[in-house]
Image 1 (cartoon, rainbow, N blue to C red):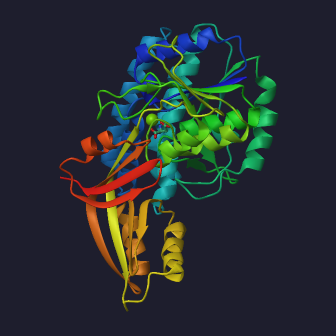
Image 2 (cartoon, helix red, strand yellow):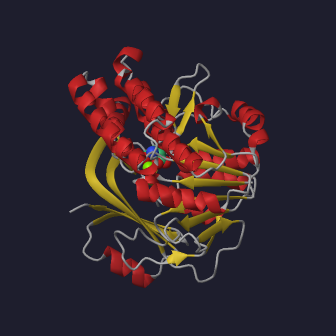
Length: 422
Ligand code: ASP
Ligand code: MG
Protein backbone atom coordinates (compact mmCIF):
# COMPACT_ATOMS: atom_id res chain seq x y z
CA UNK A 1 0.00 0.00 0.00
CA UNK A 2 1.01 3.62 -0.44
CA UNK A 3 0.31 6.77 1.54
CA UNK A 4 0.03 10.08 -0.31
CA UNK A 5 0.03 13.50 1.26
CA UNK A 6 -1.17 16.63 -0.46
CA UNK A 7 -0.49 19.98 1.23
CA UNK A 8 -2.46 23.22 1.18
CA UNK A 9 -0.80 24.54 -1.98
CA UNK A 10 -1.96 21.49 -3.93
CA UNK A 11 -5.63 22.10 -3.10
CA UNK A 12 -5.75 25.88 -3.13
CA UNK A 13 -8.42 26.22 -5.86
CA UNK A 14 -10.65 24.15 -8.14
CA UNK A 15 -8.01 23.68 -10.84
CA UNK A 16 -5.49 22.47 -8.23
CA UNK A 17 -8.03 20.05 -6.81
CA UNK A 18 -8.68 18.67 -10.28
CA UNK A 19 -4.97 18.12 -10.64
CA UNK A 20 -4.86 16.26 -7.31
CA UNK A 21 -7.80 14.12 -8.41
CA UNK A 22 -5.96 13.39 -11.62
CA UNK A 23 -2.93 12.11 -9.72
CA UNK A 24 -5.10 10.00 -7.39
CA UNK A 25 -6.92 8.60 -10.41
CA UNK A 26 -3.65 7.32 -11.84
CA UNK A 27 -3.08 5.24 -8.71
CA UNK A 28 -6.69 4.24 -8.08
CA UNK A 29 -6.06 0.52 -8.41
CA UNK A 30 -3.55 0.52 -5.56
CA UNK A 31 -4.21 0.28 -1.85
CA UNK A 32 -4.12 3.97 -1.09
CA UNK A 33 -4.50 6.30 1.88
CA UNK A 34 -4.56 9.97 0.89
CA UNK A 35 -3.86 12.55 3.58
CA UNK A 36 -4.90 16.11 2.74
CA UNK A 37 -4.30 19.52 4.32
CA UNK A 38 -6.59 22.50 4.48
CA UNK A 39 -6.98 24.66 1.37
CA UNK A 40 -4.23 27.20 0.73
CA UNK A 41 -4.21 29.79 3.47
CA UNK A 42 -7.26 28.46 5.32
CA UNK A 43 -5.29 27.46 8.41
CA UNK A 44 -3.95 31.00 8.76
CA UNK A 45 -7.48 32.39 8.48
CA UNK A 46 -8.73 29.90 11.09
CA UNK A 47 -5.93 30.94 13.44
CA UNK A 48 -7.25 34.49 13.26
CA UNK A 49 -10.80 33.25 13.85
CA UNK A 50 -9.61 31.35 16.92
CA UNK A 51 -8.10 34.60 18.23
CA UNK A 52 -11.38 36.40 17.61
CA UNK A 53 -13.35 33.81 19.57
CA UNK A 54 -10.80 33.94 22.35
CA UNK A 55 -11.11 37.73 22.52
CA UNK A 56 -14.89 37.34 22.26
CA UNK A 57 -14.92 39.50 19.15
CA UNK A 58 -17.79 37.52 17.69
CA UNK A 59 -18.54 39.94 14.87
CA UNK A 60 -15.00 39.69 13.55
CA UNK A 61 -15.17 35.89 13.77
CA UNK A 62 -18.47 35.81 11.92
CA UNK A 63 -17.21 38.01 9.09
CA UNK A 64 -14.12 35.89 8.58
CA UNK A 65 -16.14 32.68 8.65
CA UNK A 66 -18.54 34.06 6.02
CA UNK A 67 -15.61 34.91 3.78
CA UNK A 68 -14.02 31.51 4.24
CA UNK A 69 -17.30 29.79 3.50
CA UNK A 70 -17.70 31.76 0.30
CA UNK A 71 -14.22 30.80 -0.84
CA UNK A 72 -14.92 27.12 -0.23
CA UNK A 73 -18.34 27.29 -1.83
CA UNK A 74 -16.98 28.90 -4.97
CA UNK A 75 -14.55 26.04 -5.38
CA UNK A 76 -17.21 23.39 -4.82
CA UNK A 77 -19.46 25.02 -7.43
CA UNK A 78 -16.69 24.74 -9.97
CA UNK A 79 -16.07 21.10 -9.13
CA UNK A 80 -19.55 19.73 -8.53
CA UNK A 81 -22.18 20.76 -11.04
CA UNK A 82 -25.17 19.18 -9.32
CA UNK A 83 -26.53 21.94 -7.07
CA UNK A 84 -28.35 19.34 -4.95
CA UNK A 85 -25.23 17.35 -4.25
CA UNK A 86 -24.71 16.26 -0.66
CA UNK A 87 -21.44 18.18 -0.39
CA UNK A 88 -23.24 21.53 -0.24
CA UNK A 89 -25.16 20.37 2.82
CA UNK A 90 -22.10 18.82 4.42
CA UNK A 91 -20.08 21.97 3.98
CA UNK A 92 -22.86 24.17 5.34
CA UNK A 93 -23.09 21.92 8.38
CA UNK A 94 -19.37 22.20 9.07
CA UNK A 95 -19.38 25.98 8.70
CA UNK A 96 -22.37 26.26 11.00
CA UNK A 97 -20.54 24.17 13.52
CA UNK A 98 -17.62 26.60 13.29
CA UNK A 99 -20.03 29.51 13.76
CA UNK A 100 -21.25 27.91 16.98
CA UNK A 101 -17.77 27.70 18.50
CA UNK A 102 -18.68 30.14 21.23
CA UNK A 103 -21.75 28.14 22.28
CA UNK A 104 -20.01 24.77 22.02
CA UNK A 105 -16.72 25.49 23.76
CA UNK A 106 -15.57 27.63 26.64
CA UNK A 107 -13.14 30.28 25.50
CA UNK A 108 -10.92 30.18 28.57
CA UNK A 109 -8.17 27.87 27.35
CA UNK A 110 -6.70 29.26 24.16
CA UNK A 111 -4.85 26.15 23.04
CA UNK A 112 -7.97 24.04 23.44
CA UNK A 113 -10.09 26.57 21.59
CA UNK A 114 -7.45 26.84 18.87
CA UNK A 115 -7.61 23.12 18.16
CA UNK A 116 -11.42 23.07 17.99
CA UNK A 117 -11.39 25.93 15.48
CA UNK A 118 -8.26 25.39 13.41
CA UNK A 119 -8.94 21.69 12.82
CA UNK A 120 -11.98 22.58 10.71
CA UNK A 121 -9.90 23.44 7.63
CA UNK A 122 -8.97 19.84 6.98
CA UNK A 123 -12.57 18.71 7.40
CA UNK A 124 -13.67 21.20 4.72
CA UNK A 125 -10.94 20.27 2.24
CA UNK A 126 -11.28 16.51 2.53
CA UNK A 127 -15.06 16.63 2.21
CA UNK A 128 -14.64 18.60 -1.01
CA UNK A 129 -12.00 16.34 -2.53
CA UNK A 130 -13.95 13.21 -1.58
CA UNK A 131 -17.12 14.61 -3.16
CA UNK A 132 -15.26 15.54 -6.31
CA UNK A 133 -13.64 12.10 -6.60
CA UNK A 134 -17.10 10.57 -6.28
CA UNK A 135 -18.30 12.61 -9.25
CA UNK A 136 -15.44 10.96 -11.16
CA UNK A 137 -16.90 7.59 -10.15
CA UNK A 138 -14.01 6.67 -7.88
CA UNK A 139 -14.80 4.53 -4.91
CA UNK A 140 -13.89 6.68 -1.92
CA UNK A 141 -14.03 6.36 1.84
CA UNK A 142 -13.96 9.67 3.72
CA UNK A 143 -12.31 8.91 7.03
CA UNK A 144 -12.49 11.24 10.01
CA UNK A 145 -8.85 11.08 11.14
CA UNK A 146 -9.94 11.97 14.67
CA UNK A 147 -11.56 8.56 15.03
CA UNK A 148 -8.20 6.84 14.58
CA UNK A 149 -5.37 9.27 15.43
CA UNK A 150 -5.48 9.40 19.23
CA UNK A 151 -3.43 11.83 21.30
CA UNK A 152 -2.93 13.10 24.82
CA UNK A 153 -4.44 16.41 25.91
CA UNK A 154 -1.50 18.74 25.29
CA UNK A 155 -3.53 20.87 22.86
CA UNK A 156 -1.57 22.20 19.87
CA UNK A 157 1.39 19.93 20.56
CA UNK A 158 0.05 16.60 21.73
CA UNK A 159 1.86 13.30 21.82
CA UNK A 160 0.41 10.47 19.78
CA UNK A 161 -1.01 7.53 21.69
CA UNK A 162 0.59 5.00 19.36
CA UNK A 163 -0.95 1.89 20.84
CA UNK A 164 -4.51 3.12 20.58
CA UNK A 165 -3.88 4.66 17.15
CA UNK A 166 -2.38 1.43 15.85
CA UNK A 167 -5.32 -0.61 17.03
CA UNK A 168 -7.83 1.75 15.45
CA UNK A 169 -6.03 2.02 12.12
CA UNK A 170 -5.58 -1.74 11.88
CA UNK A 171 -9.23 -2.38 12.79
CA UNK A 172 -10.89 0.48 10.95
CA UNK A 173 -8.69 1.34 7.99
CA UNK A 174 -6.71 -1.73 6.96
CA UNK A 175 -9.73 -3.87 5.97
CA UNK A 176 -10.85 -1.10 3.56
CA UNK A 177 -7.56 -0.94 1.65
CA UNK A 178 -7.91 -1.93 -1.98
CA UNK A 179 -11.68 -1.68 -1.79
CA UNK A 180 -11.85 2.06 -1.45
CA UNK A 181 -9.46 4.96 -1.73
CA UNK A 182 -9.21 6.36 1.75
CA UNK A 183 -9.33 10.14 1.96
CA UNK A 184 -8.46 11.60 5.33
CA UNK A 185 -7.25 14.74 7.06
CA UNK A 186 -3.73 15.58 7.99
CA UNK A 187 -2.92 17.55 11.12
CA UNK A 188 -5.82 16.48 13.35
CA UNK A 189 -6.46 13.88 16.01
CA UNK A 190 -8.45 13.55 19.20
CA UNK A 191 -8.03 12.88 22.89
CA UNK A 192 -9.43 9.90 24.76
CA UNK A 193 -12.49 12.02 25.53
CA UNK A 194 -12.84 12.81 21.82
CA UNK A 195 -11.83 16.44 21.91
CA UNK A 196 -10.06 17.51 18.77
CA UNK A 197 -6.32 18.15 18.85
CA UNK A 198 -3.99 19.52 16.16
CA UNK A 199 -0.51 18.17 15.67
CA UNK A 200 1.41 21.40 15.05
CA UNK A 201 1.54 23.60 11.95
CA UNK A 202 2.40 21.68 8.79
CA UNK A 203 1.67 18.49 10.71
CA UNK A 204 -0.02 16.67 7.84
CA UNK A 205 3.27 15.12 6.77
CA UNK A 206 3.46 13.60 10.22
CA UNK A 207 -0.11 12.26 9.97
CA UNK A 208 0.84 10.57 6.71
CA UNK A 209 3.86 9.01 8.42
CA UNK A 210 1.66 7.66 11.22
CA UNK A 211 -0.51 5.86 8.65
CA UNK A 212 2.57 4.69 6.73
CA UNK A 213 4.18 3.28 9.85
CA UNK A 214 1.12 1.43 11.10
CA UNK A 215 0.02 0.13 7.70
CA UNK A 216 3.64 -0.68 6.76
CA UNK A 217 3.42 1.25 3.51
CA UNK A 218 5.76 0.35 0.68
CA UNK A 219 6.26 4.10 0.23
CA UNK A 220 4.98 7.50 1.29
CA UNK A 221 4.74 10.29 -1.25
CA UNK A 222 4.57 13.96 -0.27
CA UNK A 223 3.33 15.88 -3.31
CA UNK A 224 4.63 19.45 -3.30
CA UNK A 225 4.92 22.57 -5.44
CA UNK A 226 8.69 22.10 -5.72
CA UNK A 227 10.47 19.41 -7.78
CA UNK A 228 11.71 17.62 -4.65
CA UNK A 229 13.99 18.41 -1.73
CA UNK A 230 16.17 21.36 -2.66
CA UNK A 231 19.44 22.36 -1.02
CA UNK A 232 17.97 25.72 0.01
CA UNK A 233 14.68 27.60 0.08
CA UNK A 234 14.16 28.58 -3.58
CA UNK A 235 12.42 31.79 -2.51
CA UNK A 236 15.62 32.98 -0.86
CA UNK A 237 18.07 31.21 -3.15
CA UNK A 238 16.87 31.11 -6.76
CA UNK A 239 19.83 28.90 -7.69
CA UNK A 240 18.76 26.15 -5.30
CA UNK A 241 19.25 22.67 -6.76
CA UNK A 242 17.26 19.49 -6.32
CA UNK A 243 18.84 16.63 -4.41
CA UNK A 244 17.79 13.27 -5.89
CA UNK A 245 18.69 11.02 -3.00
CA UNK A 246 18.94 11.56 0.72
CA UNK A 247 19.07 9.30 3.71
CA UNK A 248 16.91 9.48 6.81
CA UNK A 249 19.73 10.96 8.92
CA UNK A 250 20.30 13.84 6.53
CA UNK A 251 16.56 14.49 6.25
CA UNK A 252 16.26 14.59 10.04
CA UNK A 253 19.24 16.92 10.33
CA UNK A 254 17.83 19.27 7.68
CA UNK A 255 14.42 19.50 9.26
CA UNK A 256 15.93 19.76 12.73
CA UNK A 257 17.81 22.87 11.65
CA UNK A 258 14.63 24.30 10.20
CA UNK A 259 14.38 23.22 6.55
CA UNK A 260 10.67 23.49 5.92
CA UNK A 261 10.36 20.92 3.19
CA UNK A 262 9.13 18.17 5.53
CA UNK A 263 7.67 18.35 9.02
CA UNK A 264 10.43 17.35 11.49
CA UNK A 265 8.39 14.55 13.07
CA UNK A 266 7.81 12.78 9.76
CA UNK A 267 11.04 10.87 9.39
CA UNK A 268 11.12 8.76 12.55
CA UNK A 269 7.94 6.72 11.93
CA UNK A 270 9.19 6.02 8.39
CA UNK A 271 12.78 5.22 9.37
CA UNK A 272 11.57 2.86 12.09
CA UNK A 273 9.86 0.70 9.47
CA UNK A 274 12.36 1.41 6.69
CA UNK A 275 9.70 3.04 4.50
CA UNK A 276 11.00 5.20 1.63
CA UNK A 277 9.73 8.75 1.47
CA UNK A 278 9.31 10.37 -1.94
CA UNK A 279 9.01 14.12 -2.26
CA UNK A 280 7.51 14.81 -5.68
CA UNK A 281 6.06 17.69 -7.65
CA UNK A 282 2.30 17.74 -8.12
CA UNK A 283 2.91 20.01 -11.10
CA UNK A 284 5.35 17.68 -12.85
CA UNK A 285 3.82 14.56 -11.42
CA UNK A 286 5.64 12.20 -13.78
CA UNK A 287 9.08 13.27 -12.48
CA UNK A 288 10.76 11.20 -9.77
CA UNK A 289 11.53 14.00 -7.26
CA UNK A 290 13.64 13.12 -4.22
CA UNK A 291 13.81 9.76 -2.53
CA UNK A 292 14.70 9.58 1.14
CA UNK A 293 15.54 6.15 2.47
CA UNK A 294 18.20 3.97 3.99
CA UNK A 295 21.09 4.74 1.68
CA UNK A 296 24.58 6.22 1.88
CA UNK A 297 24.62 9.94 1.19
CA UNK A 298 25.75 10.73 -2.37
CA UNK A 299 29.38 11.90 -2.42
CA UNK A 300 28.49 14.99 -4.39
CA UNK A 301 25.86 16.28 -1.96
CA UNK A 302 25.73 20.06 -2.32
CA UNK A 303 25.93 22.34 0.72
CA UNK A 304 22.50 22.43 2.35
CA UNK A 305 21.47 25.88 3.52
CA UNK A 306 18.82 26.61 6.11
CA UNK A 307 17.92 30.03 7.46
CA UNK A 308 15.74 30.31 10.52
CA UNK A 309 14.40 33.79 11.13
CA UNK A 310 12.31 35.13 13.98
CA UNK A 311 14.83 33.91 16.56
CA UNK A 312 15.69 35.17 20.03
CA UNK A 313 19.14 34.86 21.53
CA UNK A 314 19.36 34.44 25.29
CA UNK A 315 22.55 34.90 27.26
CA UNK A 316 22.58 33.35 30.71
CA UNK A 317 25.27 34.02 33.29
CA UNK A 318 25.54 33.06 36.91
CA UNK A 319 24.85 35.83 39.39
CA UNK A 320 27.76 35.02 41.70
CA UNK A 321 30.45 34.44 39.07
CA UNK A 322 30.36 30.70 39.71
CA UNK A 323 31.05 28.37 36.79
CA UNK A 324 28.34 27.51 34.32
CA UNK A 325 28.96 23.86 35.18
CA UNK A 326 26.83 20.76 34.70
CA UNK A 327 24.46 21.61 37.51
CA UNK A 328 23.55 25.04 36.11
CA UNK A 329 23.44 23.82 32.54
CA UNK A 330 21.19 20.95 33.58
CA UNK A 331 18.92 23.30 35.47
CA UNK A 332 18.55 25.69 32.54
CA UNK A 333 18.01 22.94 29.99
CA UNK A 334 15.42 21.28 32.18
CA UNK A 335 13.41 24.50 32.17
CA UNK A 336 13.50 24.56 28.37
CA UNK A 337 12.29 21.00 28.30
CA UNK A 338 9.46 21.65 30.80
CA UNK A 339 8.21 24.57 28.71
CA UNK A 340 8.70 22.57 25.50
CA UNK A 341 11.04 25.12 24.01
CA UNK A 342 13.36 23.78 21.34
CA UNK A 343 16.89 25.11 21.41
CA UNK A 344 18.18 25.87 17.93
CA UNK A 345 21.75 26.77 18.89
CA UNK A 346 23.44 26.34 22.23
CA UNK A 347 26.91 27.35 23.33
CA UNK A 348 28.45 27.54 26.77
CA UNK A 349 31.52 29.19 28.24
CA UNK A 350 32.97 29.35 31.76
CA UNK A 351 30.36 31.56 33.37
CA UNK A 352 27.83 32.05 30.61
CA UNK A 353 25.66 30.20 28.17
CA UNK A 354 23.94 31.32 24.96
CA UNK A 355 20.79 29.75 23.58
CA UNK A 356 18.87 30.57 20.43
CA UNK A 357 15.16 29.75 20.29
CA UNK A 358 12.11 30.47 18.13
CA UNK A 359 10.50 33.73 19.19
CA UNK A 360 7.32 33.18 21.18
CA UNK A 361 6.52 35.98 23.62
CA UNK A 362 4.42 33.86 26.00
CA UNK A 363 7.02 31.11 26.36
CA UNK A 364 9.84 33.62 26.57
CA UNK A 365 8.31 35.47 29.52
CA UNK A 366 7.59 32.21 31.29
CA UNK A 367 11.15 31.05 30.82
CA UNK A 368 12.56 34.33 32.09
CA UNK A 369 10.19 34.28 35.03
CA UNK A 370 11.49 30.87 36.12
CA UNK A 371 15.18 31.44 35.54
CA UNK A 372 15.65 35.09 36.47
CA UNK A 373 15.95 34.49 40.21
CA UNK A 374 19.16 32.54 39.65
CA UNK A 375 20.72 33.90 36.47
CA UNK A 376 21.39 37.15 34.73
CA UNK A 377 19.58 36.94 31.43
CA UNK A 378 20.19 39.13 28.42
CA UNK A 379 17.69 38.90 25.58
CA UNK A 380 18.54 39.75 22.01
CA UNK A 381 15.49 39.69 19.77
CA UNK A 382 15.51 39.79 15.97
CA UNK A 383 18.35 37.41 15.26
CA UNK A 384 18.61 34.74 12.57
CA UNK A 385 20.34 31.40 12.45
CA UNK A 386 22.11 30.30 9.31
CA UNK A 387 22.97 26.61 9.16
CA UNK A 388 25.10 25.10 6.41
CA UNK A 389 25.47 21.32 6.19
CA UNK A 390 28.36 19.99 4.07
CA UNK A 391 29.86 23.45 4.01
CA UNK A 392 32.95 24.64 2.19
CA UNK A 393 34.97 27.86 2.50
CA UNK A 394 33.42 29.42 -0.57
CA UNK A 395 29.84 29.08 0.55
CA UNK A 396 30.65 30.21 4.09
CA UNK A 397 32.40 33.36 2.82
CA UNK A 398 29.57 34.09 0.45
CA UNK A 399 26.77 33.70 2.98
CA UNK A 400 28.39 35.40 5.96
CA UNK A 401 29.63 38.49 4.09
CA UNK A 402 28.44 41.70 5.73
CA UNK A 403 26.75 39.92 8.65
CA UNK A 404 27.21 40.84 12.28
CA UNK A 405 27.93 37.38 13.58
CA UNK A 406 27.56 36.87 17.32
CA UNK A 407 27.90 33.10 17.58
CA UNK A 408 29.64 30.53 15.39
CA UNK A 409 29.33 26.83 16.00
CA UNK A 410 31.19 24.33 13.88
CA UNK A 411 31.38 20.56 13.57
CA UNK A 412 32.84 18.50 10.74
CA UNK A 413 29.68 18.57 8.68
CA UNK A 414 27.67 21.50 10.04
CA UNK A 415 28.35 25.15 10.69
CA UNK A 416 25.89 27.55 12.30
CA UNK A 417 25.96 31.32 12.56
CA UNK A 418 23.78 33.53 14.69
CA UNK A 419 23.60 37.16 13.60
CA UNK A 420 21.49 40.24 14.11
CA UNK A 421 18.80 40.78 11.52
CA UNK A 422 19.21 44.13 9.83
N1 ASP B 1 -3.20 22.91 7.46
C1 ASP B 1 -2.19 22.79 8.46
C2 ASP B 1 -1.20 23.94 8.32
O1 ASP B 1 -1.30 24.71 7.38
C3 ASP B 1 -1.48 21.48 8.44
C4 ASP B 1 -0.67 21.22 7.20
O2 ASP B 1 -0.78 21.92 6.21
O3 ASP B 1 0.13 20.27 7.22
O4 ASP B 1 -0.35 24.07 9.14
MG1 MG C 1 -0.59 23.87 5.10
